[in-house]
Every structure is written in C-alpha cells, then in structure tokens.
Image 1 (tube, one colour):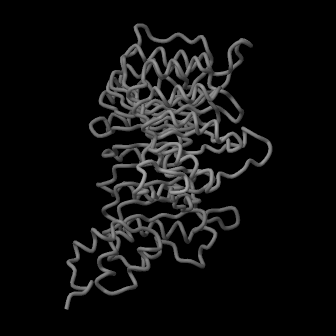
Image 2: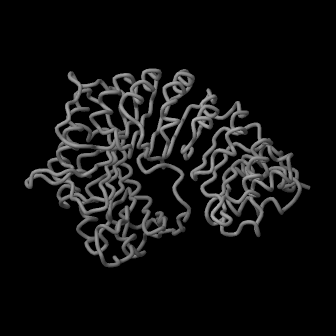
Image 3: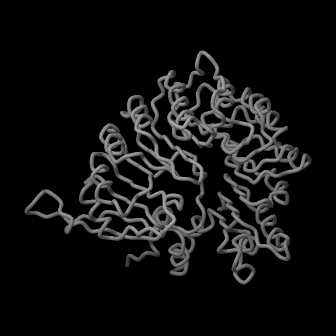
Length: 460
C-alpha cells in the first residue's frame, strides 16, 4: 500500500522546501519520515527577534534547542540575531552562553547576522567557520576585537553597521585579505570612516560588484566618485549626498556595468527656485550617464519631510534609462504631479516593481496614471507619516480590485502591512476582465524588521 511514509526522503525534502514557519513545525509532528524530511529545513535558519526575546526564557531559544540536540547542528546554514534579551540593563548571560555553545556546534554556517551591539562573545566562534560567506554585524568593536574579526578571509558579502574607528582603521588590512573573495561591501552609519581609509580599502578590491556607503558623516557623493575609480566593475552603488558645489573627478569615473543605483538625499540650503536635493540628484544622474550605464533599479530616499520629485528629474531619468528600468523606489517623497507618474509608467517599458506613497484619497487619478504601464507587476505602498499629520485611509479590498482591474498586469500590492495578490476568474463570454470578476487574496506581512537595508537592490 502506498503512503506518504513510502515516499523517498529526497522527495520529501524537496516538497518541504516550499513550506516555512509554523507549517514546518506541524509537518514534523505527522510521522517519523516527515520529521526526518523536515528537519534540514526546520533548522536551516536560527532566527531570534524581538517577539522571541519578549518570551525568553519561558520559550526555549533556537540556540538552546541546538545545544540540547547537537545532531541537528549540521543542518544550520544561517544565523540571524536581531535582538538579545536584557536582564537589569545587561545582555542576558544565559542567552549569550546558549548562542556561543550553538555556534561552536554548527560547522556549516554560511551567513551570520547580529544586528545588536552584542557581537564580542561570538567572535571566537565565527573564526572557526570555514564556510562563512555572508556577514552583517553591528561593528562597534575595540581594537583587540577588530583584530580577531578581520582574520575571517573568505567573506563574500560584508556589511558593517555603526562601525567604530577601531575596525575602520583596519578595513584596508581586511580588504587586502578579502580581495579574491569579496563581491559586496556595505558600510552603514560609520561616522569615523573617511576618504583616505575608504580609498585604501577599495584599492584592494578591483573586482568589487556592490558598494553601499550610506549615512557615513564624512563620506558624500563626491567622495564616492573619487574612490570608485578603484572598482570599475561595480554593478550596485549606494551613496549619501552632501553639500553642493563639490568637485567631481574629470573625466567622469567610468561605471559601465552599473545596474542598481541608490541615492540617500541629505538636504542642504539651496536657492529658493530649486527644491531641496534637486541639484544633487540631477548632478549625480548627469555624471553617471557619461558612462552610459543601463540602470535596472533606481532608489531615492529623502529625510523625514515631504518633498516632491520635480518633472525635470523624472524626464532626466526617462531619457537615459527608460528602456531598462525594472525597479523604481521613491521613499519619503512623492512625484510632483500625476502627469510625471504617467510619463514614467508610459516610458519605462520594462518596469515591473514600483515603490511609492499611494494617496488613497486620490486613488482614482493615481490609478489612471499607473495604468499607462503595460508591464507593472508589483506596487509597494511606501507609507510615511511625513505626508500627512492625520491618519490616512487604509487601502481596502474595493480599492485593490479597482487598481487591478485598471492595471491588467498588476499582480501584487503591498500596503499597510498587507499583501494583496490577484486571483482572477475569467469570463468565458468576454475576454476583458471586469472589476467584479477579479478576486484578490490577502495575507499579513511579517511584523519583524526587514532582512535587508532599505538601500539594497530590490528582489521579489
């Protein structure tokens, strides 16, 4: 008699790869064969976030589970520590001990993330991970701690958040060790980083594909263009703007491979006739266009205030990159007019994903503008309090159905912590879709923080 228990274990593992979260836990309780098939997926990622910390130690941490069952440690590939429980203003020593023991037991870790300032106890264990390739850490470290950390020589994707001067001073030494492996370097809020150190570090990385330097007080867009001469193969670049009037290298630095560009706009005093940030954005776009890059992704973010992207900038973006752009993000800002939005949607013939603030009160006119796109598949509502001081209406099912009826290619809308997906019922008597015939599915978006920085290239 054929039963699920007779199915080959490799087949079960392939099936269970499509499940996640509580579904994996439930599957593990069905039978011994299901338990064996689901274990590699269940323990592949050890994630600890705020919701777990609130219930600790009443609920066992995944690290304690590994310590109690060492036979499962071989399956662990990813460790993601987004918070650490606190006891009397200090990190819980029991939790730190559990984490350290678990890390010592897991030989196959390929990615490690520690988003809180609690890395030092784990540095020793990380030094033993020969397969570690992705590292993202809160890098507020001492010189001794930094010296131990930079012995990791096989990292491919390195992200240092809030890095101290101690590790920044050692960055050139570290990149020299990583020069044959490192493909992406991300430095976020490293206020002690300066042009001399960054230039020396990048000099060892001629094959670097991704550089993201955001929120670093001493590094602005002019500095970035001075140092990227060392990295001509860049495909992804993120930068923070600074004061206007800075001199750029001439002739313009060649970035022919650039595909993803992110600009974090910091406002500076400008002439009354020019909106804040417009000059810097225009200058950056003009400068990189000299290399004739084919941008696939463009992200721009303003500080916490309402700014309208001017039509001249939209036209500048369209004229150079309309045929290649697939992903556009406008964060903490709006497009100046619906005419600009319509022009963007009409011209960008490859556009698949658009992130912008959705004005629910003016949904009809904005939907008409969006309908000019014949390729748009995903629309993300970048909700921001800066657009209004009053609570705004929530995008409801009727609005979602209207948008999907007006934009035939639209498959997904993300708004207010919800993910709406198209489920269409075709009318056999009429090839055209009617709003009443469109069914939408709804699921809640995860409440924990994003796994990636906002400025990183978007992925579906």
